[in-house]
Length: 423
Image 1 (cartoon, helix red, strand yellow):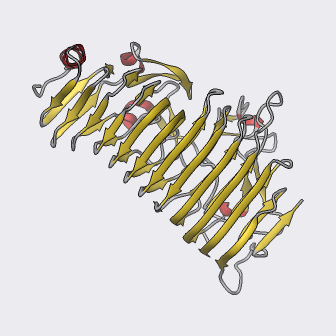
Image 2: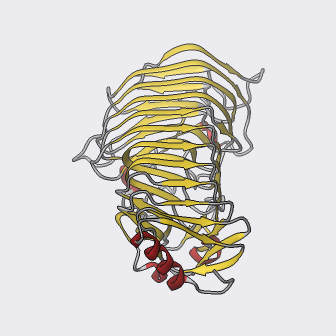
Image 3: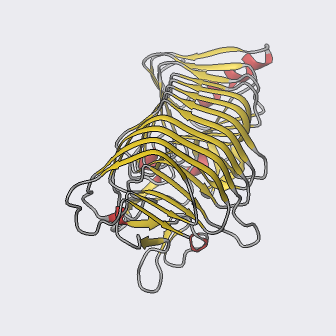
């Protein structure tokens, strides 16, 4: 494929021809290649050789032909789309350069610490209702929105992928697993502003059998996360042997939309959590679990049989466990050893319950991000009742086994007891 722009038609023709012949590999050689909307076909491997860079055209309208069945942050489009493309794959040591920051951001968002995103932004890669999809070894840079979105996939494998996104551009999640079954994410290296690896159910279709192992994640939001979209059940999930570095929240479970979350394990994870400005949800928590109804017609689903074990590291915020009712059962924290250290911003001293119902239609803010009340305060942010704790539990009774939180002595101003519990 020549180093020229654009190559959309030629590249799509080669993909379609390979699929018509029963599958095969289409290779992009070293050099700069520019494309518009691409569709992966069944049985075809799109391979980016070492030194190859696939750049995508600017503008949301460039991707009108690639419409996803699931709307995400007002986006229904993808730069690369695979729909029922069984056995399709992407591989190689090349790079996908998505042009998110220059093409889809509108400058700083006041004092919130983030950029204002363009109203409509394409995702980089959306894979829908596909069996045996694989993504191997590629680097993806500067996503405008969610980077990889797996929707209702079965037996998907994501291995050795590097993601480097702008750390101030919202909604640039690394790997989004949205319904489906038997999904593996291994040995990936992700740096992004939004969630690193996030599991959700945007529809009532369930998600089960997910394994996330050996990944390094740096996130300004939550590195390893379940929620907040939880319309369908999520169960049988293991995050293991991962490193969370230079992040806001490390581990999180957020029940909002009615689906049950059960049989979850976080194991053998090192964490490094720092405070963030109010434009990001949370502030320096090693582990957060919140259960809060977002829509009255569909109460938040229960959270059952969760284990967080063998977790070590440092955090500027607290472990925060918050339930609006009696919906959290069998939560075990075991062999946790954390150093809690003062942050520079002081934002870790507040409970963050976002997203709240107010974030659905903010009158003074940004949808699904933040809104201010009449007094100018961000809705969902509340100071801890006794000052910053090491662990705070509201409406939750966790089982604590060898949980150690090392704190400064004397305690800094505004800090409270190591453990606080509220009914």
